[in-house]
Length: 425
Ligand code: PGA
Ligand code: ZN
Image 1 (cartoon, helix red, strand yellow):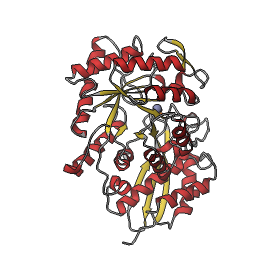
Image 2 (tube, rainbow, N blue to C red):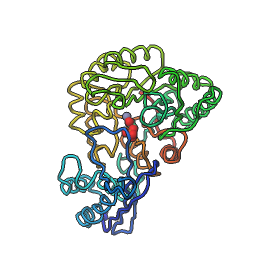
Image 3 (cartoon, rainbow, N blue to C red):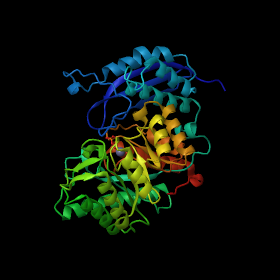
Image 4 (cartoon, rainbow, N blue to C red):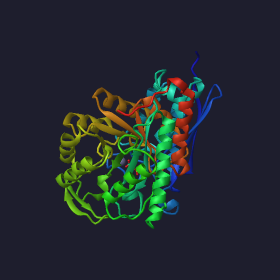
């Protein structure tokens, strides 16, 4: 089959779900195929993430404009990539890395580079007449991820007094994705009722979960267990719980000192947090814990994993930033047993796939993730199926930018029909 070549690339500035500028990229091929992709943006970011280029022009969007990144797409990346075979994803990504020339993509911007990289993958899939999940994952891509739904928000994603950033409902016992999504969406609605009855706020945080002021972090988790039961499900059997502490946000020095300031629980060391986690695992049906410690607290991560890694999935997000350099170190030191995978932390589709491959080769799990600033782009849903990781997080059962990914997964499951797989492991 004749491969299509890139004939035009155009960027533009759009807004993300927080109303901040982000990059959208359009690509045209010489066979007439057109594609578009939009880049997400985080709030609780890791120190070593690839750099999102922002204009810093305080006269526009408080300095957050991305016109320079758009210009880089149009004037630097487009001329270099036009004429290339669109199916050569790694060669295209490598060309952009060379054009950028920095270790953290600070010259062209990871937002510029990722927009192009995603639009290239999507154009190649379209031109090959394949759904994106199959183009990226091959004919064997048929496993739907278990949706980890962030139904209660704290930390930097809300203005409440809960330290832990994300409390996720995980439908581990559902027979398929569609039913799993129903289990947790119903739980979300019951949670709203419970909060209402307690006279607590039911406004939502950045990822669509509720963000009430609560008595403690334990109160958050106990209220979720109550919601699971009242929705008619068995905690731990039908629906389990996953947590993202995003512990950077309550770290004092990134080296093992913490201050659980929002809940008033006060100063703690890594070992206190590990003891707290141990107690929680005895009491609550937690199956996954992300960033239980801060990104600089490698010793804490090693301790946490050695004590609890045989019971739950210990995920590194800010500590690894989807970067094989840090994931490799994590594997060597046994600092976790899973890595969070966010496309814009590293900035190209092929490097993200490399990060997944490294996890898989080491017998680690990997957890595919959206960002707290999102768009309606559903690339992530197809990517999760393609990567065969078995679970993803895309926020709550509210806010269209979150639901868009879950709805795309419903479509994929329907397309796959009897061949679709769904299980937690
Ligand atoms: P972020 O949060 O997108 O704001 O970084 C998500 C996470 O910490 O997993
Ligand atoms: Zn995280």
